[in-house]
Length: 513
Image (cartoon, rainbow, N blue to C red; front, top):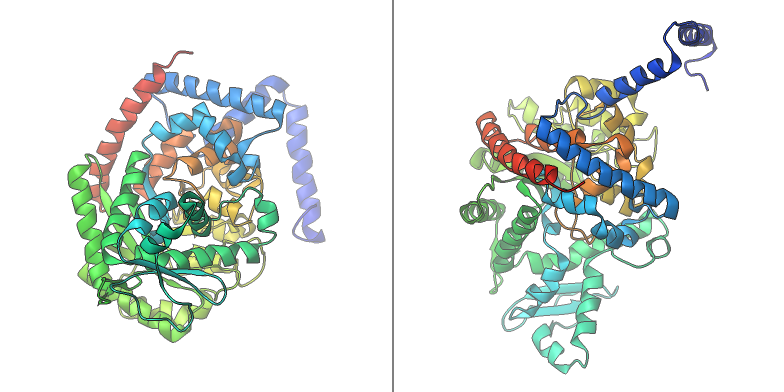
């Protein structure tokens, strides 16, 4: 359908006829004209401007041979992981040779990950819930709560009596079955996701319940330190050497009930990252993006903005900026919070924003309208931006400003924005070379680890057959380029990454054909 109204149609028709005539009347043979178009598309796509070295070309040949073989098989069997729900595709992905290569690939940085979902839930069950003084109870709605205390936590009004896990397990006939039931409360994983989560309301309800459930475990001070370290380890093992975490900075408590403030939490992030770097060569570090929930009133968000400004002043190398998190469809818009969000600018204070915006299927609403305000408020990066291609003016202007989007394929699928990742709107953006990074959002809740699963979905599904080593290289470079590291730090990070990239390429190039 032609756009722009009847008055524009004659001009558009004339243009289309002229283009058609130029092809049919041209002396250029159709094969040559086709090759020229294909070459233009190849150059336009993400990474299309990169020139590969000889060894990279060899590595690319090996990689693309495997990719084409897997895609050919998928066409025959009709079992293509990116077209399937991740929970049902995960085992297939793990058998993929392409996936195993991506696991070894140095991916640079993870720029869109939430603090309370970076360490595998299996570790929470098998390690944390087995620690001394861990209690649990059930709310009236049947939701699990945990608390570390000695001898016992105060009885909460919303909960049944506290039960010491250590004693409870001793009475069980089948502890493994009980631990599996705990795990099912810590993740969204299920055999039949389409049935279990019939709509977005249902899955978001479970999603938010998980964070409520595990918060009592993660926010216990000794666990908090270990949890950060464990999360960094899982990403490091996945060849990710720098993270920027959205962090809510909920109160962290001690066994005796003492509560630590937000500054203590930031210092702990900094200390754990420094300790981790000493033990893990090439690890660059982490920063946090202080975040609050988008369903709170304006006055509370004003206080959070003031807190963000205070934390950024005191910890400029650790606190990168501010974001509003939570479900966009049911939360308040960025425009609703405009009075609060303008405070830093009015005070002449530089507080970078990293807004979630456009994480929705809706169009023409205040929800996808968040994209406009993210642009106007100079968001450094935009989280998800799922609806970006429906807003051509924002798309164009944000591209001019070189504002990247943080694409989280598995999250978008699991939370029911798109079922087949070949149809993800980022496919259009990737094909046109729009700046982006790939990240994993809440990997532990989705049953994933690190970045490799999301890289696989992006490389095989969103990028299609034409995405190759150039695409992967550009995504890794982008993760450093669009990080909040200082220019000197970015140079050091690029040097570290290039060394690892060259080793990865050399190994891949030596693979037998």
